[in-house]
Image (cartoon, rainbow over all chains, first blue to last red; front, side, top):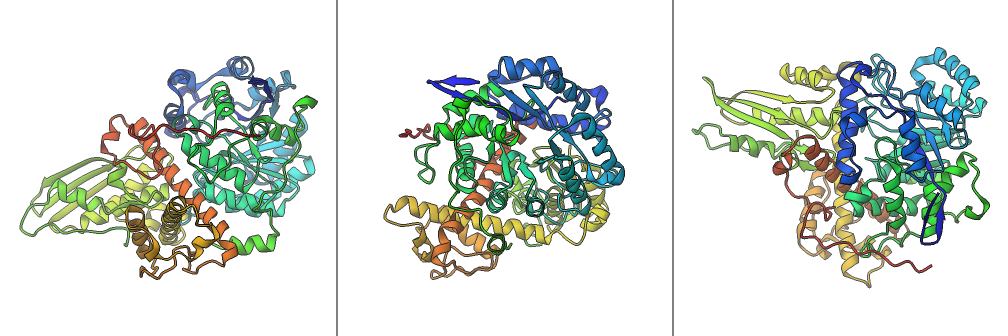
Length: 348
Length: 271
């Protein structure tokens, strides 16, 4: 819980990780390149007071995570979103067993989401069923740019991914978080395209699709599909820290999201350990749209409360004290529209 | 290869570093719609005199190891083409440094294997469609900048009414010049009576559809400006001193980019 100026904010950090990128766990040069890329994001977008050393960044462990989120960070509940990256790290990037153990020990504070790779075919489906039997997760995180043998990425619209979504349906796994990294094949087209989310969301209307980093670097494509599909949501992983170095850009991201998808489908996340939640929450509560951006209305306290926690709490049935709950807003002016009209308007 | 504009040095003189740099300034990052020379992507450039002509060695660098390999390849192969087209150049080596596909791309460039020869099963046909996608986005962003500038300057102008604004109605300046360039690049007319707000086939919108078309164009502009600055910033973080090789980009600039910008003032909430 974060309190400021007499207002109380229930905080759900909807995208966190417990990773191990230490050299002894790196399988090859790509393991180093991957964590170096994250560390450059961290160095480029963090205030100086929040910078970590490279060694701290490689591995945090459960104890530090609990402190950064729940002691220092105002977070009421956080959700693990593991990226496995078995092609880059010997024991995986996300520490699946450790995260599951930590969530089991702190069920009121942590939710464990799992991951799968549809390219593992039937064997992977069996594994998904067995893992679900053991871990009882209600959500999964999919990193579409994961490397797997000769393949360096997949799409949500691939037939095998659909098989996995059908299995998710049966198991009661309702929340699909998507991290759109560059999906390599075919290289002919834009690798960051989110059109495959559009297909999957239309065909699995009973599942929620949360597009992490709100589709960045393709915010425009994300807004367009999300406005057509009421079951598509936006996660603010990576977008949040722009508040510090690029506040005008951040204001436009939030302004566009509220215009296109409305205040009820946007979820806060620190993307821990890319960044820590404390400063992001403090600054977001203080944040306001610059005065000269007349195309956007000012952000309201209600909108901030929903984004910081209430929206994700609703999706995950996380109990919220009655006095902190808020009603949904009306539909945005942009939709959701009827599918046939959306498809016409969306012709590319 | 339309993204590359080559210029020939005066005949009879040796090729200089300046000539190479000028040739490379015609190579665009297709995603950010800017010359790679303005983005600081040239890591090093060497010109040596050989027996048959100049021998050129160029190293490129990108903001992360995981920048999309199709864009990485386009910039590297366009660079090689632009330099090879100069008169007096006998040999060109272009190498991309520190990328997850550096080995693959550099081997493909050295062998002149082309796009499909380089990426084999990961390539279907060509990268032309990818270029077109981003040329259209660049045009969309340029269109929005002009119309938003107009809306901000005229309080009496309503959003739906910008659907009938023509090129001749726009004030001259950087934004209009950029729009005309982008219209030429996507094959749209540039006469003064041409309607500014058009879809990708050049058709104007019905009045009722104008506000959403403008909003959609706005999200494209925000995306391109945001990416252009984030990529610049990441390059500076990754390669110390690389900021000196970057040109200032006024579109989407913030206080942290330019100390002369006014500090932002925030709105009051009345609720």
